[in-house]
Length: 550
Image (cartoon, rainbow, N blue to C red):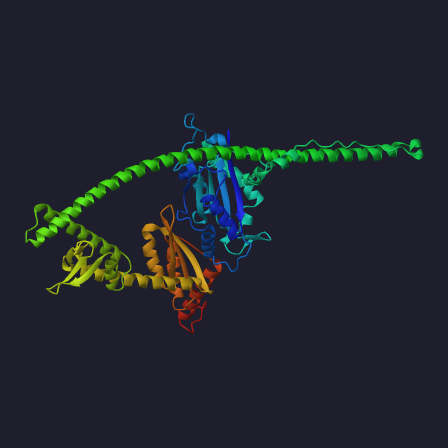
């Protein structure tokens, strides 16, 4: 039976994170990886291959921690795989099956996301170009449990703590839980409390460079050093027991030294033997790469021959076009009209220029447009120029083909150009306004005295809840969609007597609504609700005697 394998590595510096990224995304040479199989690797989350350190820092910033230690573990790399027999090779091709999109890969990712949170798993890279397929997952160690102090839970509910999430006890439980999750694939847990240690293959890379002279020196037989027994003294002859004990100890020490020397040589030879095995595997990979390179060279040569032939055909066609052009000039000077083929060619060229101009304008209008001059500048950069003809009408002329297009005839998305320009400018203003509003929301979230909460709601109700929160005076500065189609709204607000009552009402109604979850710091909630109770008492008529009846 194959074994489920899971290992973790704590990352506490940007350099460690960069080293992991270089290995995972193959941006540096990886001796034990086959470049010919690199296309089978796949990133499941961090598709833009952003820095692990930056992604973790952004996630930690959401916690609003009062302080963060410089040596804090911000990322934990989790390796998930199985023993080699889980991934058999094809008897004919000698290759393993491509497991991209397989249920095994999906279940591995699902296991991590359920255990550590979807938002805390910031990267997951599948490697199939090494000896055994495996996953490298990057986890931000954020726990949802308060810190245990003197038997009581204290502090923030959500906090950064690799020490708690990946303690020795937690790691043993992780091994057990992962094996249970992988049981449907015929995988079982390794031996608990085993003293086996994973050896990084990179420690053998240097041993491959052992010189022949060093190897010869290493394999020389050890010189036998005989053990010399000193002569017994006169007193020792009377009572030889002390003499025997002393010399027995010396003999044991002498033998232990020689055994240690032999073991040291054996360890060095073992390391070199392992390194040579890796070197042979590397040679096999390089031979395969060479064969692939030769095949590529042959393909390139064939493509070059095809392109050379195509170039010759194009040169011939160009010569024909030049002849037609010269004949056209002569006929035009003689006052002759265009024939049917020339008229058809001109119509097609005009249609192509019109399509190109409309495509350029459509592309420009999709971006931010604050002034119509931006569209004009983009057209000029691509060979079009706006001019006026003899009738003082605005036309668009393409420099390369001399085609002239009436601006009033241009239709962008079926509408006149002028109307589309107005809509684009107005849309840009609205987008800039939204950016300003978002900047203000972020300023509220970063305020040193800001109060925070998260509201989890189904996606179809998220917009309505967000509008109610904003209307009450709080700021929704982030909305994240979860895989189960629920939306997490990040809410922040600064205490204000004029808005605290309306914000409290929205939070109370949200808590009372089925399908909506509200999470916030107890101190923030207590302060807000206490302020509301004070306001309600102030509204009561003064002078009334409470608790008395007449």
